[in-house]
Amino acid sequence: MNDSLLTVNDVKTHFQVKRGPFYKRQHGVLRAVDGVSLSLREGEILGLVGESGCGKSTLARTIMRLLPITSGAVTFNGKDLTNYERDALRRVRPEFQMIFQDPYASLNPRKTVYDTLAEPLLTHDIVERSAVATEVGRLMETVGLAKRFVRKYPHEFSGGQRQRIAIARALALRPRLIIADEPVSALDVSVQAQILNLLRTLCKEEQLAMILISHDLGVVRHMVHRIAVMYLGKIVEQGPASDVFDHPRHPYTRALLAAILKPTADAAATLSELVLKGDPPSPVNPPSGCAFHPRCPWATAECAASTPPLIACGEGHEAACIRLDAVGATVPK
Image (cartoon, rainbow, N blue to C red; front, side, top):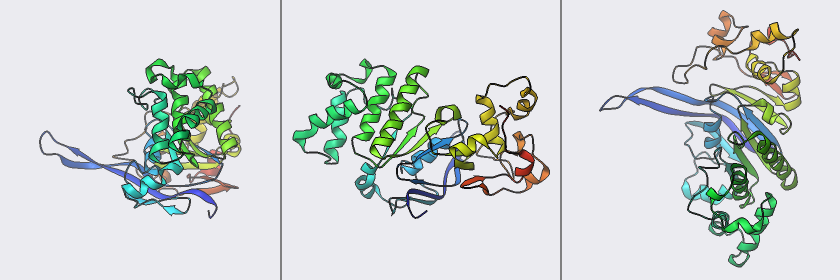
């Protein structure tokens, strides 16, 4: 897409697996991200969902260039970041930032809130040194924290307040893109709603693009414009949020949605077919063909023989399943 702010093209992130008591020998290749393509426009929110271990966080860190890219390309604002070295990355990093999952671990316990927010401002010359205090105060107000807290340390805040500080730190560099990796999974339910509402408001007011990563479709349901569903390192379905929720086409997406629905007596039998059996396969030794076929109630021998590509099944809606007609397009209510 020519108007995309971010384009991820067939990105793979593989790790060598080595074993041995003394001399480590290569035992295999862990395919954490295995050929992912997606795009994001300015001001758009993309929900990246899937079970734990499917490669969501690895993909996020690969896009951020915190992990090396095995193959493929990541283009941001027209710049191909794939082969950028450390100095070149440092110059463009203010434009894309990340909010990490654990607010307890992502903040330096030895730095006050003021120092945490002032450091990126000074490092990247965002404002004059004389204006740093004013900008730190503005950031605190933006995320709903009082200015008087700037001299406190992270351990003096609750989990929700810590995450607000982490959001303020990401906003300090005035980025165009934020990747939020499970930003509310470590928080209480009541605090989750506050943080999600804050992120949605900031995206609207600041025209930020965002990739919101979650294993829970219910968390992203009312926040995102588009959804990409990930399974064992691959995107198995993506499309407009309303279309994916109302007409999911991949069996895995249907199973994820069934997990957040409250089944009625009439739907119980159908929903039982959608309950995932067993654990996801190992990315070191993935199944042949469609990686989901060992857990899929609609799988046939053909599913184990060939890897399905993403097939168009609506306007901007794609699913990687060769049995789309058999799977159907509705989820029991």
